[in-house]
Length: 201
Image (cartoon, rainbow, N blue to C red; front, side, top):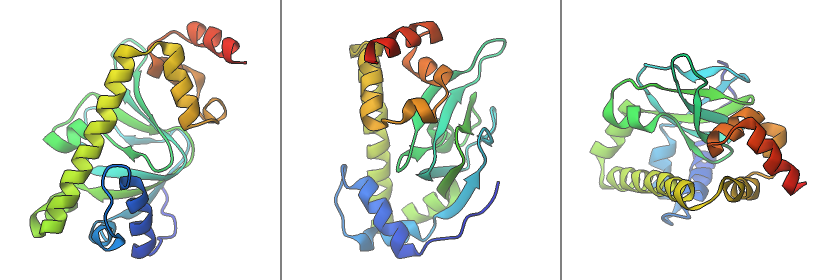
């Protein structure tokens, strides 16, 4: 892991505000307390960020690059639970909330730059002020909305429709993300994914 040059707190606060605005619009000042805890981190392509059966200690925001969240399966291929790109929240949320290790690991799929806040600092932020409590609620609600949308898409949409949504969100997904991970995320075999891609071409 390497450390990129840190941006100013105001710059981080403005970018965090843009991420949260779809869920809750607040002045930049509200986000400066949160941004003050964010630490820049960087990982190389394919580097493991959080290992399986370890506790998640950070909530990350992806500044540049992409990463995946995977469920480890003994004697089988891991399952891709999520693909994350610029401005996405990222991490093993279940472990972060419970404070317990899980069978989930996270991995950089490209060289990735993150802004990370530790679980300890999150709790400190929540406890120290009404603003901190507000930030905690907004963060929790936005993550819930994100995961709930994913769950609904999985149940309602076909793999082809979910792939179309991925393309709308990240048009360069094929160039940036290994196809085996996209297929796993869609819940289909690489062969089925190839057939879907041919229809789109």
